[in-house]
Length: 107
Image (spheres, one colour):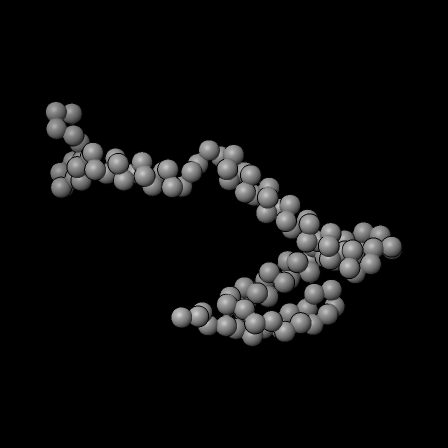
């Protein structure tokens, strides 16, 4: 079974493109708008930055943002799979409360 595809028109660097995507059109427009903002930043950085070079630099800048975000996530020391496994082990060890005050017996 294939996902539903959506047709959407976007503009990047003044060029209108028609895309077909599995993502909702609004999401695709938001992604394109973000890329276009980064692209514009590079195109206005200097008079000698041509469109192709600006697009490459914009792609590199966005990839750097992705890597930085991943690094921060990993650097937090939080491993979601490990947390889920720990939660599941604790759930097996600690019986679910059946009402009452929530305090353990003898507390």
